[in-house]
Length: 116
Image (cartoon, rainbow, N blue to C red; front, side):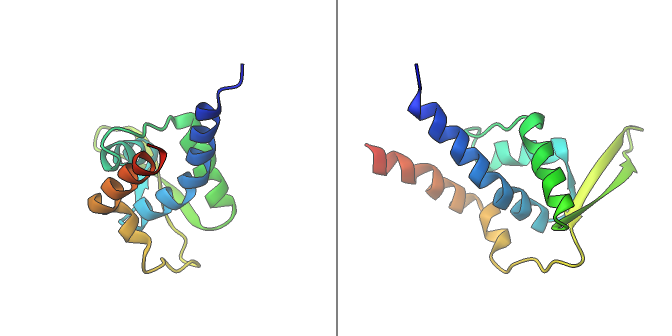
């Protein structure tokens, strides 16, 4: 049986992932696991992406030259692939606003208010 709520959630996640990732990177360079943690933190635990969802988004953004990636070794000795805005792209003025906690609390309450 088809579950329409599940379909909406997947579509919403796919559509929102690019601007969310770009907004997080507007705050500074980051790597995959840290981006996943930041999404969880900003959403108050309501959004939990998997690496299987995030890494294709990062690869697509890199292929489109929106971001660039570089490998670094962390203090722990572990290699991490850091992503940042491409020098060819200007960070939009409003990009950082997506990572403001007040914006996330409003976004979380909007669907609840509309669908009740």
